[in-house]
Every structure is written in structure tokens, then in C-alpha cells.
Length: 175
Image 1 (cartoon, rainbow, N blue to C red):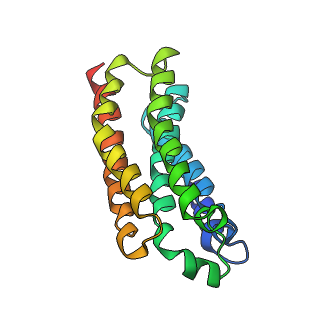
Image 2: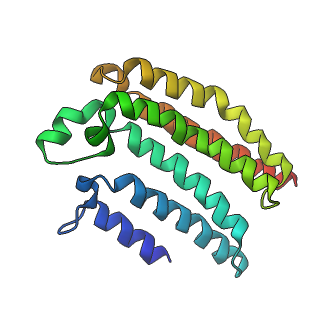
């Protein structure tokens, strides 16, 4: 499974695939981290779990957001290099709107996983990361077409990934 994650990482950037140049980087990142979390769980417990897959799903989303945000400031360079990132494909304005939905899916999935019994109620602590999510989405919306400003959004995306994942993890520990 880890080999599969590494292979996904390679085909993202490595020749002859370079799927990141075709706008598939975020999707590959998502699957790599979702599988990686599930595999880490298996390595510790020697059993498979839909709960660990669901947790990996959320980590995959939040990690892919970092990659997504890293493209906003380099649209012209990506286009010139033939890299058709989602931001190049959609444009910065539509991508900034899409970011709200992608970030929102972290919280929506968390709630659904609680409601279907995969996650304990304590994982609702994830809402404590909402101020970071709001900051990220509004900053990108306001600065989507200003490369010198929006380039910092990836750092806020890293903070969102860290805090969101931490609060979900603590929620499991408190259960």
C-alpha cells in the first residue's frame, strides 16, 4: 500500500506520466494520503477499518487543499510550462469559489461520519479549525488574482490541515 502511495507520488511529477501537468495532482495527492492513513492504521492494528479510511479521506482532502492553493500565484508560469492545474483550467476566480466547497467538505464529511457512526461525537472539535478555514477562503477570494498576495495562502492551508487533523485525532483519543 505504501508502494502504491509512492507510485502515485511519482506519476504526479515523474516522466513519462507527469499527471500533475494534466490537472490531476490534487486527485493523486488525495488518494495517496487517504491510502497512507489507512495503511498506517493497518500497520499498527493489523486490521482494516472503514473509520481509518474515512479519517484518511478527510486528511486527503485537507492535504490536497495545500496543493490546490499553491497554484494560485503561479497561473501564468504553469500555463507557459504547459501545466494545466485546476487553477489554470478554471481560472483564479472560479477556483476561489470552488475552494469554499472543498474546504466545507472537510466539515461536511466529518459530520456525516459522526451521523453514520464511524466517528465519535468528540471529532466535532474539528469545528475549532473553522476560523482558519474562513481566513483561508476569504483571503483567497479577495486576492485570487494577485499573485504576490495569494502566494501566502498555501501556508494558511497548511495550518488548516494541521489543526483540522489534530482536532479530529484528539476527538478519537477522547472517545
